[in-house]
Image 1 (tube, rainbow, N blue to C red):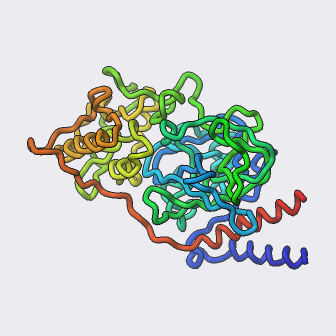
Image 2 (image 1 turned 90 degrees about the vertical axis):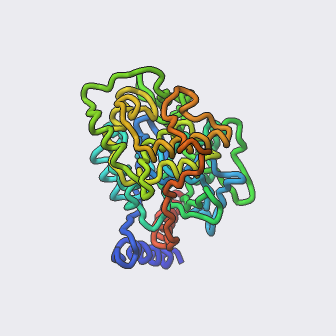
Image 3 (image 1 turned 60 degrees about the horizontal axis):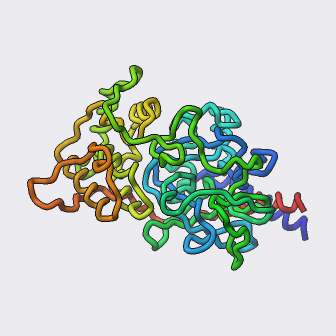
Length: 407
């Protein structure tokens, strides 16, 4: 019986790897390597802070809080996977654990550029995996990919609960599909049997009812979230967690930053409604909360396909969030100013204090002396659902072989 199962597994994985991309829709090769001594890629192992690679773009999924209801992680079939409900985030700064890249080719390319510990790619979007996720080539069949971001910390919290060996979902770089529930995606997360940490304090490790935590494991017990670089900060993250502050005074641009290029990046990234997305995104992104994810999606729509490398460079060197246009004195169009004003009003309606009310920047202008209407910004594109059979089959086979070898 075992030999028959093994033969079937080999056939399945050959079908998965060798099927032409024109038929499969993508050329994903599952990462079957033991990326650390503590487990394979789908175990989501963190050994040191540089394992987190900083990226910027979107959309992506946040599964950090998934496990119990309402964002459940429910085991499927033989338990090799869990279907996890996760927050969909339209755009922003996010992080990928280099040890948990589920695509073998992308993992090898990233390690080649960044080093096995990720130390060579601590500049935003310098790691190949960032481009792969942002341009949707990582798993094109998926609507989003699961990564980490600090978006929901103010509402959901953050912490650490150490759990003994048990089954948990390793969601980092797992593929996700949109559901009928607005702002929620379902991610197919492979599971791993080992010790792990839940990203909240004082949590029950066992959930019951076929539910498991979306979790990760740091054998050094120094946390499973990104930390700021020595003497630095993380743009767009909460200040209480090492995030960079909003700009509070006149700051000169660094000598190696081209302000002309910064303003070109702001002014040249225009939505179908002729709104310059960089300004509207900055007005919401660094003051956003979990309850305005759709608003951020509108405000930042269009940036995904734009080059913002000089903007990112400036904000990382200065150490501030959503600040590049103010430092370089970039001027938005009248239509964009009206859109920024409207975005600020809509944040206030959600009891969120916009950047304008904190430091007097990115306030926009009221349109024509009338009431501030709802400016129509481009909404994130919604792509059709299609099967991820090949991905799930390949990963399931790898997990099955690993479990047999451990038993």
